[in-house]
Image 1 (cartoon, rainbow, N blue to C red):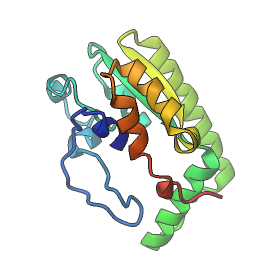
Image 2: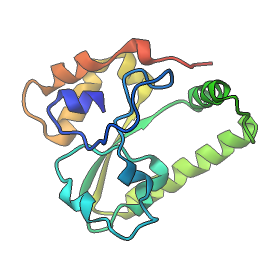
Image 3: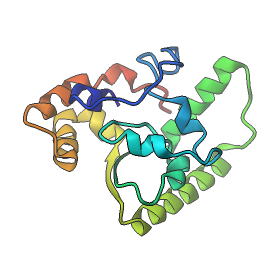
Length: 172
């Protein structure tokens, strides 16, 4: 989201969740996204055209089928997702209810389901990125984003400069 913001794309966010140990640069989220599927009003999605909206993959199925959208899908290695979740739960004093093997199976199945959803919707275009590759080589990955989103000249460099390798934590 920081890369998109650096490219000049307005970010649809509400500022409710501020930076913390889990996300030291902030969350780039909006509460309206969390209720996708729970409330019938999705007109705000249509009204937010041209803005970057952070939507977790689980909620992509709630995006209206008539809404043309470009999805920048950021993948993380499952081991990294599990390490990040474990660290967050530890900070909260909570324990995971499932083991890593179970969570890995659920996550992989979920990704297959999301892939099928995106492929089934002609209104969804998707660029898939690997988080570790973006951190390791931001310039070529930023160029891929700029091309996919048809961003103006100069966007690539601005996006690449916003990549902060210090945020690549919680790895096994």
